[in-house]
View (cartoon, rainbow, N blue to C red):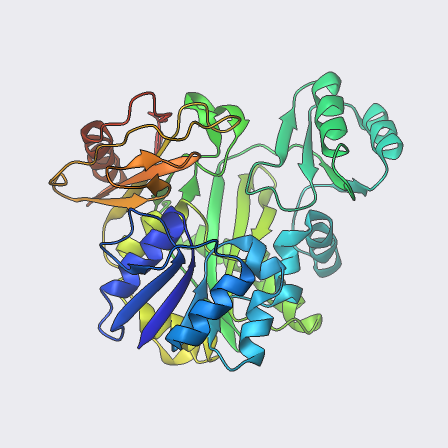
Length: 409
């Protein structure tokens, strides 16, 4: 089987790596990819826009297309490719609205009894500011549209909240969601979903804030660990309280879904509550999950695309994995490009390296998140220790790295 992966980041490198080692897969192609992926796939390069992807697909004629990023899914690329006869892992535009519009997602949750924070949504600046004056702070301010995981501000004061709202309304067609602030540990629940059912991958945890201790601005994610330890009772409660009503809601609304559904959950004093949906694999959670997948990834992803998920056994390897992101100096606001990145000739034992933003030979940073250092171990602590061994073996002057990934687990 030939598989075409769409995307260029660490998530896509991890997917290519998993597919490349799958017995069912003979060829992995990635577009646009990046220059650090060449050990796992044929990197096509190019702009990676819809026209470019279509040219590659028509030339390669893959048996399966895996869409990594959210923007193409929200734009309906999966619908167009399916109409032309391709098998696609990824929901159509209707399903991807759960990520493309936070207002739509909150209304979906409210309509179908999915536990979530109280909220109000506005497409008018004055109305949003008036609501802030009524409810006060702390409050969570969310850009309703796609912002690559960075459109969320946890505002401790009214001044911070006003600033965040006003920044969102600098953009055309702006819409803001204002939510009550929840507290508790977060869990990433990543589901494989087809027309007939779903399977949950091991629960994982992303570390969103830029700096140690959960400080600083939100980012696309600075690291992840898997699995998050949950008791059998907690897993059953998560399925009953969160996953089941989401699946019922999709069916009730007649939304076809063949792909990955990411449910961001917080464990609060009042039980599990949903923070957000993503219509694709999480980044960097995927970099920690793919090394734990003992099933044939190609066979599994193809089964989802063909609504045959129930026919495939999803096997998870024992142990744990941790991913630590090395981001460009200045990330997330002004990431530097062109910074030399020297990778070790030999990786430390029990580690993997996924490229998220490498360019050229010798490598330099393309900006943003650049390298993902992954450690594997019998426990989360061992996996984290090995991940940081790899971090310390990478030459990347000024890289932004959190040193507390997996702390407290």
